[in-house]
Amino acid sequence: MSISGAPSTLGLHERGERLILASKSVARRAMLEGAGVPFSVQVADIDEDAVKATHDPADAAGLAVELARVKALAVSRHDAEAWVLGADQTLAFEGGLVSKAASRDEARDGLMAMRGKAHQLHSGAALARYGQVFWSGVDTATMRVRNFSDGFLDAYLKAEGDGLLACVGSYRLEGMGAQLFEVVEGDYFTVLGLPLWPVLEELRRAGVLRS
Image 1 (cartoon, helix red, strand yellow):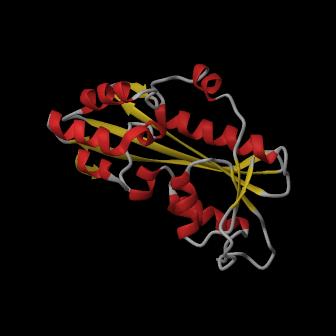
Image 2 (image 1 turned 60 degrees about the horizontal axis):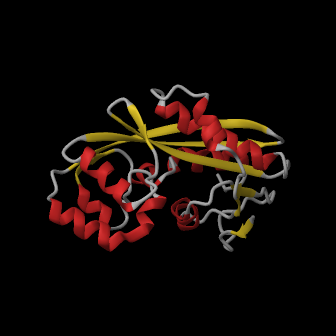
């Protein structure tokens, strides 16, 4: 599936290097558009469960990078001359990985488990071209969940609805999910799902953006 990305070409280098975002994330698309990055979107068709099955679950940061690399390569093989940005995010909590909730009840259980405790979000990214990865990186943010009341949780789940099922951890920091936390240590863009500053630097190196 291909979706047109940001129509602006303000950041486009004179050489006209093309960038494809290999992610269906609305948040990642919004970050790139907001930064003035010209791109199109092509969702990577990969088996994430298969990648996770062969990876050490204790290495959540490494898994975020590996998923980003696999996505970037999957799209790069179909459009070799474009730069392809793959990205993914993992949530590490008490030595294990937390996946997206399959239901509101599961989301409630997950948020109850994290109440009053800290977890880590790892946002990985990879840039590929000609079927090979030229750069990859990861950034981490530590999220401390406040000791919220059951009443707040009920109101939160009702307000967010099934939309929270699309988010690892069942929250969006750019929405009502911000009220779940007492402190966040790390970069805001990393929390949203992309280590934006390193990505922008690599896009300048690649010639997608002006230096």
